[in-house]
Image (cartoon, rainbow over all chains, first blue to last red; front, top):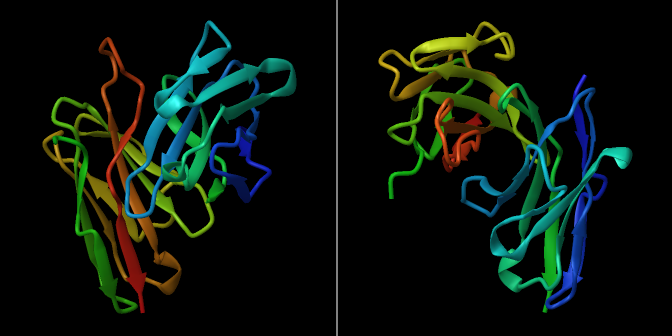
Length: 113
Length: 117
């Protein structure tokens, strides 16, 4: 069965520091992989997605993620975080053209001034 | 802005009452999804529609849950005889399947937060 693990429930980083959020998935074939961000009172917003091709994916707001098949990972990175990046971040895996996404439990990002 | 909208944004009800939530997807989107999200968890898939056809409903949490999309546009999610365990955020998303450009991206509404007393 498909599953997604986000090992870090909370991460605290200083403003301007680099960020990496971890995501590991379990899936038998090549997955569709997504990162979404959820701010309080806001809907989930897509940051980036991987379907095929280049394993380094660029997204909005300066985020990128790298698909590593050998590690079953799709970690999200940003070189320098801003206070406005404080939110909850969700990794999701899908198959069959995006039907029925399976989600991780999320990582809450806290920014220290 | 013509994003996904949900109504109401908040609903407080007493145990045993029925509730209905509405979702209006992005107008040209043919697929519509319902999810439930509880505190500290990611969204949990419930059901989805392709136009007016409900193609997957086995993940609906119990027979108290039902969803419709009668004309292939807006959708409703109904919970009958609510229980305290139904308290959660109910999310709707839509996508355009079969088109070009930015298909396969699910666009989410702001959610309806249900509290069952």
